[in-house]
Length: 171
Image (cartoon, rainbow, N blue to C red; front, side):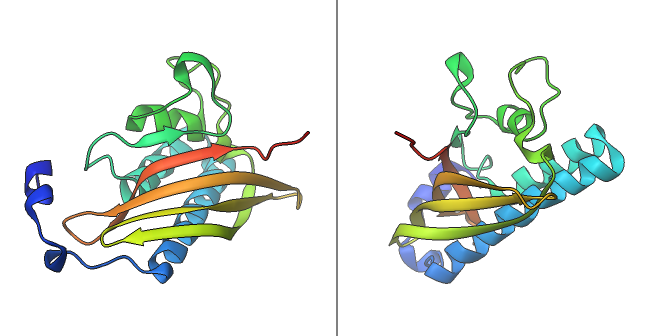
């Protein structure tokens, strides 16, 4: 479906987003992060890359256009990742086009949970911000400030179209 077709659809044509949809999307994102880590540990980087690609296809809105993605640990000219290859490199590293990427998704994650600061929902578009807690295999917790923007696509799938991430401010 083209962007023009999406833009001419009425609100009646698309299911509205709910708070439960946002919680399910965050849970699925966390399960994807864990799956990437487990694939890397069990079968190496190529399997992790395959799983990460599938996670990106299932959760992110690259089928809608550029995704506004600012990863936690990125900087310089590669701070923002609007393409799938840029996001894939952030999650699994091992890409000479993104030499600073260490692979956030291959850090031994076993669980995630989230805490909502606020959410905004307007029809088929929603924004969520809060904290994601990533727990690794040693039980260490990394707290990350997150903002996700979502849009339902023409098939009714909630897609991440904005992903901003940073470490909490420390004075």
